[in-house]
Each structure stands twice: as C-alpha cells, then as structure tokens.
Amino acid sequence: MNAPLLPARQDAALPRHDWTLEEVEALFETPFTELVFRAAETHRRWFDPTELQISQLLSVKTGGCPENCGYCAQSQHFKTGVAASKLMDAGAVIARAREAKAGGAQRFCMGAAWRDLKDRDLPRLAAMIAGVKALGLETCATLGMMTPGQAEALKAAGLDFYNHNLDTGPDYYDRVVTTRTYQERLDTLSAVREAGIAVCCGGIVGMGETRRDRAGLLHQLATLPAHPESLPINDLMPIPGTPLGGSEPVDPLEFVRMIAVARLVCPKSVVRIAAGREHMTKELQALCFLAGANSIFVGGRLLTTKNPEPTADEALLADLKMRPMGSALSPL
Ligand code: SAM
Ligand code: DTB
Ligand code: SF4
Image (cartoon, rainbow, N blue to C red; front, side):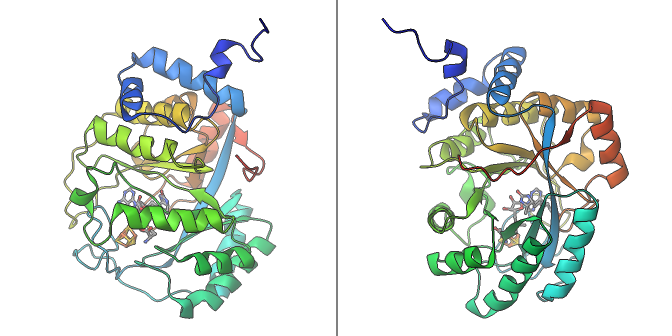
C-alpha cells in the first residue's frame, strides 16, 4: 500500500466543500483547548501564523439605506443619529486611501449604504477603484446587491475583492432583515465569483442567534462552490435605536470558537476579526490569532463606529511580534 502523501493531521486541513451542518455543530462542541489547537494546526498548514492581513474601511456613501438590517446604524428604518450623505467624489476617496496606505493598510475597502448598485454610479465608482488600485493598494468594495454585468464593470475598473456578508445562518436571517432574502445574497456572491472578483463574505455574532445559527452561517460558507478568500467575523457593535441595539454581548470564548471553526471549515480563507475589536482585550485578540484569525481592520474607524486607534494596534502587533502579510490575492 502506498504511504499517504500527507500525515493524517495535515489531511484534515485540506479544504472540503461537503461539510454537513451536524459536523460544523460538532466542531463548536469540541473542548476549547482541543478546538483551538486543531485550528492553530490548520492555520499553520496554509499561512504563516505570525502574519496579519491589514485592511482599512471608508464609508463612501453613508446612511439613508432602504434595507432594514436590524444591526445597522445606516438603515433609514431606525433613528440612530447617523446623517445620510451622498456618494463621495472619487478624488476625496483616493486621498483617504493614500492616507490609509501611509498608515500601513494593504487593502482599502469602500462601503456604501445601498440596497443595490445603480448603473448611474458606475463611472464614479470605476474612477475611485482605479485610483485606489493605482496607489498600489488592493481594492475592495461593499455596495449591496449587484448584477453580473455590474460586477464585470467593477472588475474591469480594477476591483480585487467584493464584500457581501450572509450575516447569519439561513434559519435566523428573517429575524435580522426582511427587505431581502438569503437567496438574493447568494446570487450576488455568484455574480462576484463569476466576474473573477475575490469574495469577502462572513457574518456577525451577538445578534441573539444560537450556536446552531452560527454553525449554519459557517456551513453555508464552507459549502459554497469556492470558499471566500476573505472571511470577516463581526462582533456586533450595538447601535442604540436599532432593534439589536440592546443585544447581550457574546461570551468572548464563544467568539474565539467562531473564529476557530471558521478556520477549520474554510482552511485557506483569510479570517478577519472585523467589527468589535474596540471592545476586545489584547488577550482576547491574541487568542483569536492563535485560533486562526489572520486579518484586522485598522484606522480608528470602521464605517460609522469606532475601531482601535492606530497607536493601540501598533502596540498590539509589536507586543505579539506579528507583522503584515504579503498580498492575500493568490487563488484558493
Ligand atoms: N450595504 C451593503 C451591504 O449590506 O452589503 C454594504 C455595507 S454593510 C454595512 C456591510 C456589513 O457590515 C454588513 O453585512 C454587516 O455584516 C456588517 N455590519 C454592519 N453593521 C454592523 C454592526 N453594527 N456590527 C457589526 N457588523 C456590522
Ligand atoms: C464587514 O464584514 N465588516 C465591515 C465591512 N465588512 C464592510 C463593516 C463593519 C461595520 C461596523 C459598524 C459600523 O461601523 O457602522
Ligand atoms: Fe443598508 Fe448594508 Fe446597513 Fe443593511 S447593512 S441597512 S444593506 S448599509
């Protein structure tokens, strides 16, 4: 009999697309030290565990969104005090991207509070994307739903990544947002993938969902035809005035479990601690990095909420002796 190509433990780190929900739930039930160890092992199989992918966000069109996502400061359905503004000029966005690059960002993510993309905005978005790309940054956008033709236009402009989150498991989705369906999210993700843009897709914990719902989200991601290149896990930033503004915080160890299971079911994805680092200790973030997280947002602000100050993140990376990774654009 031929010897296996890889020792058994490394075989376990190979990407699979046939996960069952029960298998994903079982990972969540694994004793904590065992789960984190297995996730760390898988992390090392595909990445240098001392490296972090560094992204920075800018809200290029804030507020007034017609969707009713129960967590969001920018929905026009809720009184959150966020003023609506128009789409920024390309030049102003490019200037902010230049600052982000000087601050150490590798990827610049442009977010708009839209239900969907309108063709009339494509020329300005294309100019923005091309200008940011020309600075030597990876480009990412999150602009709501889009059609295959719109995705192709953004790809032609130089878009590297598109962020479009499934947010939670399919069974909990209707409790969070009712103005669009899970299938519409999946359709946009296919348009992004078909256009040759890398997919950034993840979700949020802390919205009152169960562990099964969290497993449901990761099961959806792990059974996509291709795993997302970027997988953001957001810890809910509770926004007063939204239906989820009074949600109970998630146990920090449960957040670590979410990161570890994401690493195990999507082994080659870059897993980001997205929103919520503002409320996390450095010890919790270090545990997340040990459990397989290898990306953060930097820059003091997310879209409408706070992120750690750059000096705090510089200190965090120095304390942990971690450093920025090279491009995360290699195909899965
Ligand atoms: N409108 C577009 C959309 O919904 O796809 C793009 C912007 S939207 C703000 C991007 C993602 O940010 C959401 O899908 C959600 O996962 C995350 N997000 C929004 N508000 C959040 C909050 N208060 N806490 C944590 N994550 C949040
Ligand atoms: C993602 O998963 N998280 C980012 C980005 N993709 C667009 C957004 C976080 C938003 C946090 C709440 C706010 O700042 O309004
Ligand atoms: Fe609009 Fe996106 Fe906020 Fe939902 S998450 S309300 S789609 S900006």
